[in-house]
Amino acid sequence: MKKKPAKTDIVSVTNVQDMPGRPETLALLSDIRSLIEAARMRVSTTANVEMVLLYWHIGDRIRKDILGMERADYGKQIVQTLAGQLGWSHFVQITALDDPLKRDFYSEMCRIERWSTRTLRAKIQGMLYERTALSKKSEKLIQRELATLREEDRMTPDLVFRDPYFLDFLGLSDSFSERDLEAAILRELERFLLELGTNFTFVARQKRITVDNEDYYLDLLFYHRSMRRLVAIELKLGKFQAQDKGQMELYLRWLDKYERREGEESPLGLILCAEKTTEHVELLQLETSGIRVAEYLTELPPRRLLEAKLHEAIRLAREQFAAREVPRLEGNTE
Image 1 (cartoon, one colour):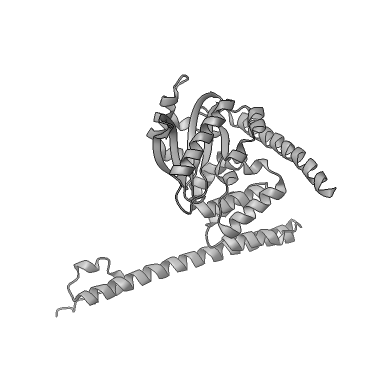
Image 2: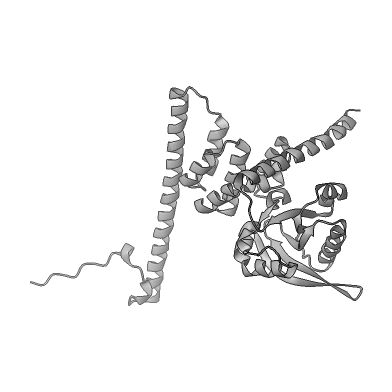
């Protein structure tokens, strides 16, 4: 006795285009498949949220009941806000950080730029937070910028730009020219973009800028989607020089006049040099001109030495910031 063929389960249909039938039937099956996939994604996200909150509550009870330590409600609020967007493995890495400002920074950047756990680990190991301009501000200003990022999803230059930039992946020898550096960056453009940040888009190399019938050439031009700005990059082999500011200002004013589109913010400039001369940068007040100066490293020093250098840079920058703030606050009280 012949068995009747089994009925086809709609859920198991994977290629509705190969099935015979009327177009409306095929469209129906396709829509049903899409609904099923969407439902699976929602279930997965909900399960992830519940697991994150479960583990948080377990850890919270252990800290309070066994270790006798209190946990601030603030930590719970962060977890609940981010649980639907980050996975448990993200939280494992973020909660291991000892600085609450660092935890906030990596949490929000991970959410905004949609980092995988592997990328998050690389960013933490690469000391991204310590290399941002944000880390060199006062604690109060850092909290304010992170709150703006959390509430408005708005990136600022202090979050975007860093110093130094790690370009060890370029594989450059001890002696190289600016053209060699530029060519190596373009050859490793994907990795260079990863070091710059995920919202950067490459626009042009050796962008010609003509002023009074005289041609100038900008090394690299990028666009940052979140900031909605063009970003001009100049590469320098040696120390930062005062005349580098004038050159970049000319490029930025030209880009603002001829390349800036409606709805975009004013272009920004980044001067990448082998050595940053701190007092020059301070006296020239570059940030008021929309210019940032940063060092690049084609070979990374030992991690301990790099950490010490970055922490010292943060300490000095915060001292300078505090010194500038005191006269301003005293003037406001008179």
